[in-house]
Length: 342
Image 1: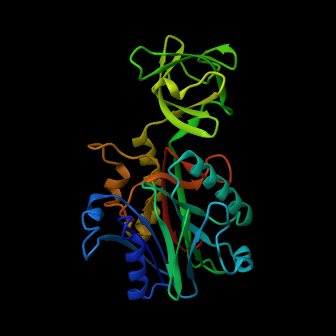
Image 2: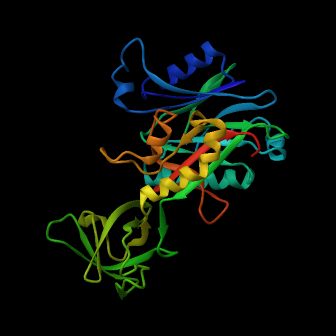
Image 3: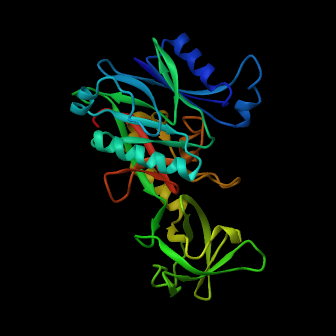
C-alpha cells in the first residue's frame, strides 16, 4: 500500500496528483499548491514540477485520503472501525483569512470530539490552495482540508508520533478591551493607553519588567483578527500597526510572549533524536509554524536537510500545549515521524 503528499504550483497540483495516482497506482494521495518559483516557472509548460513524498505502508496497514469542507466531518467510509482503532490524521488546510482560520478551529474541534485518541498533525498551507485528495479508483476531490488517515489496525502497525515545541505563550487568559489609544505621529504604530477602562499597567497585562521575550499582540475587531509586534514605552504599549487597526471600545487585545527560536528548535531536535537514529531523517516531517527570514536558517532545517515535503507552512496543526485539543500554532516548531506503536 502506497500513499503520497504532492506539492506543485496551484495551477497544476490537481493534474499532477491525479497523474501520480494513475501512474503509481497510489491507494491515497493529497496535494496542495505552492507559489515557490521552482514550481511556478514550469506551470505553463508541458512538464510541471512537483515535490513528492511517498509513504510505504506495511502489510495490514492502510492509508485513506479525504477532502472535507470546513463545515463537515471528513468523508471516511468506515467510521465504526476508526473509532475502535483510531487512525493518525495527516492534515493540510487552506485557511489564510481570519474567518477561514475560525472555521478550521471549529473543524478541528469536531474531529477531536469524534476521534479524541487520534494523533493529528499537519500544516496550514502558505498559499490559499487548492488542497486536493484522491486515490486509486476514485475521483480527485477539493476541500478546505485534505488529509491522509493512516490506519495501523488493532496492532498499531503504523502511526504518527508528534513532537511540539510551543513558540509563544499567552500572557493573559482572556482578551482585554482597548478603551483608550493614541496614533503615533509616524502612522505606523498605535499607543494603547487604556484597557478595560483602566490605565495600562505592565503587571496587569502579565509583562515582566526584565523580560526579553518578543511580545506580540493578538487583536480582534468583530470577526477580524491579526497579530502585530509590540514595543513597551513608558508604561504604554506601542502596537506596530496602522491607526485604523485599533478601534477603542471595539478592539480586544491579548499579549503573547515569543521565546527564543533556536532554543526551541534545539529542544525539539533532542526530543526526536531517538527517532532519527531508528528511522532516519527521511521519516520526519517538519511543520514549523513560523517562517525563517532570509539569512536565518532554521536549526531544524539544517539538521534534517531539505524539508521532506518540499514546502513551508503558514502555521502548524498539532496538539495544544495545555490540553488534548488539536490547535493551530502560529509560533511553534512541530515535527512528526511515521513509526509503529502510536
